[in-house]
Length: 375
Image 1 (cartoon, rainbow, N blue to C red):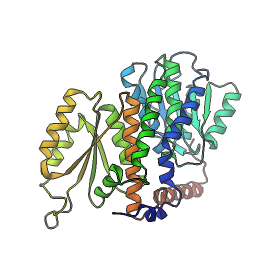
Image 2: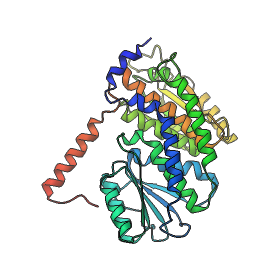
Image 3: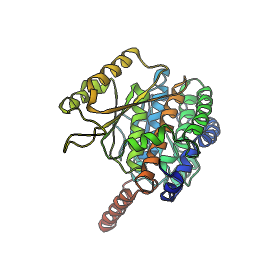
C-alpha cells in the first residue's frame, strides 16, 4: 500500500489540491456563466453555427459544451484546433476564441482571421494578448465581446472556468433551455465524489486505477458523444499529468475500425504475461447507466466478450441523470487517476517540459526569421 502523503512530495505545484477543488471551481464558474449570459450578442441574432477556436486544455471546454448540448437542437458547434478558421465561417456565424493564458499563438491567429472576415467573436481568457485585443476591438465598436476568467492555473486545470461561460452564452444566444438545473446536479455529484476520491481516506477507485495502468498500454473507450468527450479528456490528462501515452476512442465508431486492431493481439495475463509479450493492455470502459443507447450497450458487451483475455477491462460508471453531470463525473475520476499515476511514477503532474521546450524552439525560429507571431 502506497504512502500517499510521502508521494505528494512530487506534486510541487499542488495539482492534486487543484483537482480536489474542482467542485468549488465549478460553483464559481456557475456564477461566472450566469453573469456572462447577460452580455449582448455581438451578432444580434441566433448564429448559423458556433465555432470554438482553441487548443489543448482551452479547447476541451468546447468539446464538453458540444457534447452536452447535442440532443438539445440549437445550432451546430464545431471545435477548431488550428491557426485558421474553416472556410465556411462567415459573418452569420459566431466564433469563440478560447485561450486560458491569452497567448496561444494558434488562437490569436484564428481571432485575427475572424476579425478579418468580419465574423463576430467572443474571447474567453484570463488575460494576455487575446483579452487585450478583444477589449480594444470592443471599445472601437467591433462585434466583439470578452469574458475574463480567473487566472493562475494550468489550462487543463481550469475546465470549469473555460466551459461554463461558454455553455451559458451558447444557450442564451441560441434560445436553448437554461442549463442551471444540469449545473446544480453536477455540482452536488462532484462534491459527493470528492469525498470518495481524495487521498485522505481509504484507497479508492482512482488510486487503484492509477496503479493498474502503470507499465502497459492504456485504452479508454467511451459511449456516444458524452463518452467520446470523456475518453479524450482522460487521454489528455494521462498525457500531460502522468506523462503517459494513452488512447481514447468511442462506441459505436470503434466497432467499425479499431475492433479489428485487437484481432491480432494474443490473450495475455496482466499478472504473468508471456515471455517478451509485455503486460496485457488496460481497457477502461466509461459507461453511462442513465441514457446509454441500448444498441451501444449491446455493442460494449459484445466487444468486451470478443476481447476476452487480450486486455484487463475496468468499468467506470458516470453518475447523475443529466448529460453535464455524467460527463463531469467521468472527468473528475479521470483527473484524479492521472495525478495519482504521476505521483506513483515519481513525477510532478504540473510539469510540462516537452511543451515548454517546443515553445522555446518555436520562438527561436520566429526570432531568427525576424517575424512576429502569425496572428
